[in-house]
Length: 163
Image 1 (cartoon, rainbow, N blue to C red):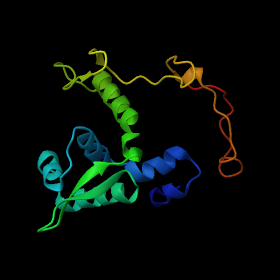
Image 2: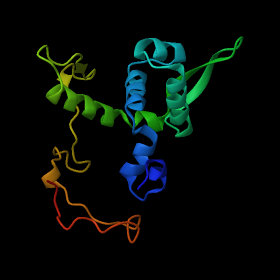
Image 3: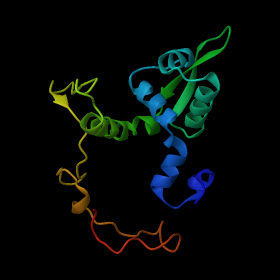
């Protein structure tokens, strides 16, 4: 499997990585969720080269994750806003942050906290079953082939549960 061909794979994870699968793209998305919208602000906050930033923003726009909206006419300037497709990545970003807080934080602890506006409590991303609400762990989930998989890749692993 070649990196440039990920978007052609019948695997949803591979297709997703074809859009958001590099470190700068995820950092750009993090800043989008923090309210950053303008090219200069991304550049200033991230210390990324203009070329790399322009490439990542274009990829996110082409992938339907961000949309460009003009905020100034003369000269024409755009800001980048999350689409619904982009907003639906929030649980992914929050889960990665939670993992980083748990395994990558230094002795001072996590650098930011997330507070749920509705109840006022500090919170973290937790993956739960969409039907019963129980937290999901790898061993609690079985994986089954569907029409989108059959005959397109190697057979799924023989184990019916996660690690």
